[in-house]
Length: 394
Ligand SMILES: *Cc1c(COP(=O)(O)O)cnc(C)c1O
Picture (cartoon, rainbow, N blue to C red):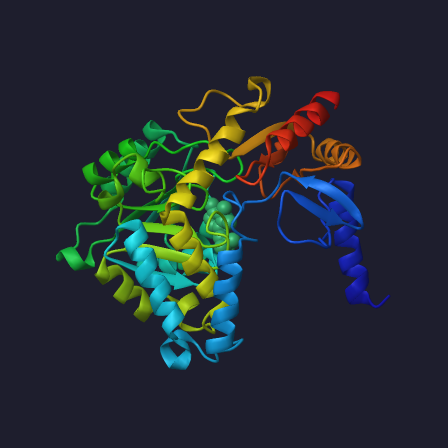
């Protein structure tokens, strides 16, 4: 081995020793409740395809039609010549779905977070994050250079003491435009714990301190609220949140990310969001599939899927549910703690035909390894029964 590879081999061994080594598994089937890995059929309880749209005929057909009409690739970034009709149609559909003035789509949720946060904040500004926000927000925080403060998970008193500190620290600039800004970011449903942010109280706090609020609805869009827009709709605070973010790759069944908000916000991002500007536009197939996903979620079948998902969640015996929640979410963490043990439990489940991967550091904190169990509308009552039996046996 040459010295470069030797160095990397040493680092990989370190990961293995700590139970943190990861490897790709090749899934030989579409994203369904039943997947095939290395020839083995497994019941899949790990997908974020909450409404079962990833393999839905309407989405697949929309993708095929878009390929036939607009080709395989977008050819350039959106601001050059890559801004195709399907991109504009998707953004109109997203804005209507979310009841927002405007929407902008990105190649992923990760790119959306990076784009908007870096565009809005600079080194003189303040960024205040819930301890458990997604890695894309943490990475954007580093990249934008703003002064970063983290409040304990869902802890309003902790957040308020930070906002008070920021207020005292904020120099009073001569003009409003030159004053440093404060952006608070949280998720509405947390990705690894499945619990909810107190959005109503957060909105009150950010108004009290003149801060901005950004909410990542990655795990709530399509599932909560009367029109399935997300938790901001369910709690009637949509019009008080400056930046609404989400992904097109989870309940919406396709791929990509989005930001919804005011016309000014979207126009500003087109001009300033570097992950949007300096990246080739998403392929027509992905964009058209996402638009079909939005249409389906908005329709009666979307509501039927949501109900099916909620029915499955309610079938899970209380012993597997974490602490009481204000409402059920599709993410159920089964806390194990030790990384190596979590991997062993996941492997034992796989032997029984159940696929639930172990989630470890750095996705969650050290010593907080878990099985992250997700349910979807495509799971049947029998699938749930099989899951419960296997979990009880282990
Ligand atoms: C998945 C996820 C993202 C990233 O979205 P992608 O479209 O997968 O890049 C962002 N935030 C949260 C909370 C997520 O769970």
